[in-house]
Structure formats: C-alpha cells, structure tokens
Image 1 (cartoon, rainbow, N blue to C red):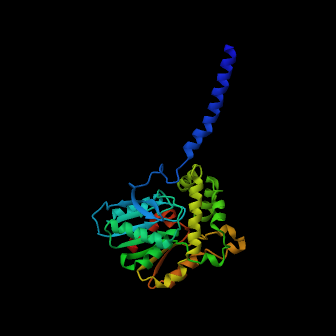
Image 2: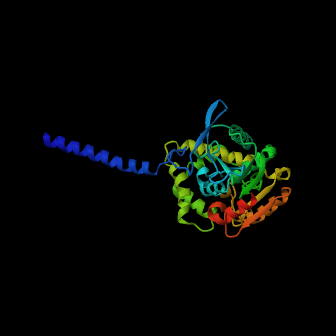
Image 3: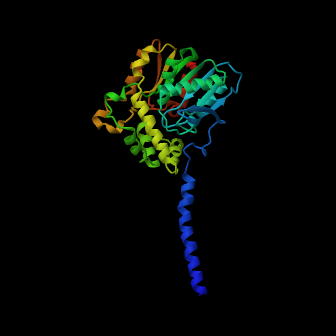
Length: 333
C-alpha cells in the first residue's frame, strides 16, 4: 500500500511538473494587450476619455526639455503597428534641443485602452487636442509616422491654428486604398489578425519596413509578438481590425490641397507599404506603394510643402537612418 501511494504521488507530481514547463515559458514571452510589462523610454501618464458610454485611458509621455527650453512643443503620432515606445531616440534629440515633447498612444494602441468603439481620425484628432488643452499647450509641431501621418494630416486640417508645422514621415494614405484593395469586412480582417504570430510579424517587418534587417530591430517584433501570447489577444486582434477599417474607409488623400500649415515630408525612398497588400497579386503589388513617387506627388499637392528623401531607406527612417533623420527633422523645425 505504501509503495502504491508513493507511486501515485510520483505520477501526480510528474504531471504537474510537465504542465508547469510550458506555462512558465509562455509567461516569459507574454505581453499584455496594454503593454503593462513593456518599459517606455520616459514615464507614462494617462489622460481620461469618455466616449460611447465607456471610460477610457489614453497613455502619453510628456518630456520636458533637457536643455534650456525654446518654448516650443513637438507632438509625435505613432504608426498602426507601434506605440510611443519606438520614439525614444527622437524624443531624446528633441528634448536636448529645448523642445517639449508629447507622445500619445492613441486609443486602441500601445498602453492605451483597447476599446470596442467606432474608430475615427476625426475623433482621435479631437482627443489629442483635448490632451494639449489640458497640458495648456496652444500650438505644436506635429510629426506623424505611417498611420500617424494620416492622423497628423487630419489634425492639421481640423486645427490649423494649433499646428505650427505638419511633419509627415512615410505616411500611409497617400493613395486611396479603396480604389485597388479588395474590400474586406471588419470581421474578416479580425480573423486575419488572429493568425498573427511572432514569426509572421517578423517576416512582415523584414519584407515591408526595412531594406536590411538588423538585430536591434528584434525589439520591434518582441512587443507585438508577445501580445499574441496574451489571453486577451482576441480583443487586441479585433481592435486591430477596427483600426484597419478606419484607415481603409477614411482617406485623407483628397484633402492635401486644403492643408494650410507649413509642411515637410520625410520619405524613405525604398518604402513600398500598402495597407491590405496581401490581397493583391504580385503584379498588382508592384503598381502601388511606390513612395519614391508618392512622396513627390503628395508634396506637390500641399501648398508650399517641402520634401526630404532618404536613399536606401524603407518605411521607418527614424529607426533605419536615425542620424540622417534627426538632422533633417531638427533642420526642418
């Protein structure tokens, strides 16, 4: 009987030990959908928002100048697949030149609430204005990367009196994706988002964002890759689908002619980003997302706009060619 009990206890212990291995491995790789375990380059604060009967939080960094203040502010708007965490070196450079830097995570992104709401660039622009009002910032230069470029453009169109300069870094939305990308419902896009893994994210970033992959880019993969392990990943995926629909259905390309603030475009010439590109055939893909052409075309639409181009650079100049981008940005400010 004693031997039988010892054997039973051994089997029970072995069973739980086997279970514990994958559990602990998963915990090591898992990141929450509000990036609670992701360290941002500067302290994060939260701005309360109430919309559609929901109390939400918009995360943001408010970085004061590290040198004598020049009295000016720069707001940084992140891209769709990112949050404020990837602006670290840009913030440091701006703060060291006397700028105050405000870096929001838009609702639905980064450390901000992942809400089931109607996503709108107009509404996002209003929330960012409300944040600036609370911080008593009357005017700011607005730098938007990728999707952030669409938001920055909408902000400048709605609030030109609050916008010192519009700075667009490889913004998406330079084409009307509705003209050539097949329509998918938010629910269909949700099913696609659910398939994401660390490996698929890495493959997408390697093929779409950079001309040459470097080891330090792995941190950009680690964060969204870790989120795919979260028990709340389905919520993240649904919000990602909702914001995909926002981008698809709310173009700004027809309104560049109406921009009335000083504008500079920063364009990595090797960028070929297209939202929904996987829905096109290889031959069709080659026809769109040609930033070496789209950048010039867009600059020609905006009265008085300037364009700065980076050779051998893809979708994220501030990471791929950081020195060149910083020099160009500071010169433009």
